[in-house]
Length: 476
Image (cartoon, rainbow, N blue to C red; front, side, top):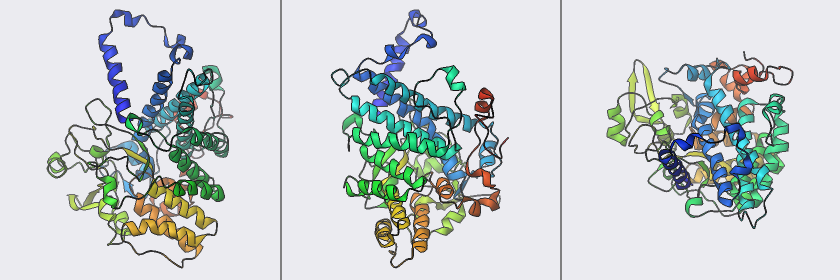
């Protein structure tokens, strides 16, 4: 998949550089119809790839929502006003990060809707991979909507290609409507049309296991634990996935990231074409470039945008091997009286600024096992839940659990998610969905309405109708 995106961009650049003045004589964007764009199997494949490409922008800032907002991380450097505000629960709706996330999610949705509308005009003799293209579009639309509702709450439900006039009339649909009428139906349909695995340049596309895993997660978010258990059980019993023997191998980028624990990533590729990720450079302390270059061969500059808090380090057992991977304190920097730490989960050699090959892990198998354990426990199957939880513990040589009550098991599962998935963008969303956010974060400035972020100001201004498109409570 990385290679496929790379090839498409190279071809686009080649076309642009080889064009004469005739290139200017194209139809205006408003005149280009989807009938012109979608005619062959390759047209639809390229269109689906466009959805994946838009998701890369969505996940570029996921650490801000999932980590910096939480009690696990902060913007230690303190030079980014927006991140400081998000960390302190004082953000405003005019922050560009919200507008960008909203725009990019709806770009995925718009592209997916166009694909789904046009592909129905063809049969498999013309579009041999029609089932797969359809399933991928529905998976990607579901993922975009999942990110929207977990970030902003109620959002417009748009499942067809709409005119600008109709778009202005689209109000905000309730979260449960988006889950029950878009996200879950899309994922249930997608799993039947997606392959279990891919080979060659198709590696990195959504699989049936990815659709089932995300569907199980959606059920968990709406607290339908029975359906969450059943769906996640399908993933676990498929024998498609397994935990890597060594936890550290998950973050060893000399190893292929598409291993047995991988389920779905946002794909990035280094190579100087703007397809790399920024995580490696951005998460290293901004002390001296010489440190990063000497120890890790990271060149191009440092950001210190997502620093783990020392409280997270102290929460780990001293014997837990995940601690020193999640939070590095062996080479600390002292700035005034503040110890500066960093996560080693995104460390790899980088030749130039923000050109890292490191993917963003959306779902990996350990996450599925922990969600499955949570669903089992909520369904009063605590012994079975501990069996799944202990698979995670055994890998890192931590003592296994036995004989816990349902409440004790719930706490153990929540803690294990923090230790296993720390600094991977999960913590804030876990705190919100389990109802623990306010109790843990009120001392840091959180108010009850901060469980969602503000709707971007420009969206409020464009619709300009609070009766159908109100701002989230508590925000300007």
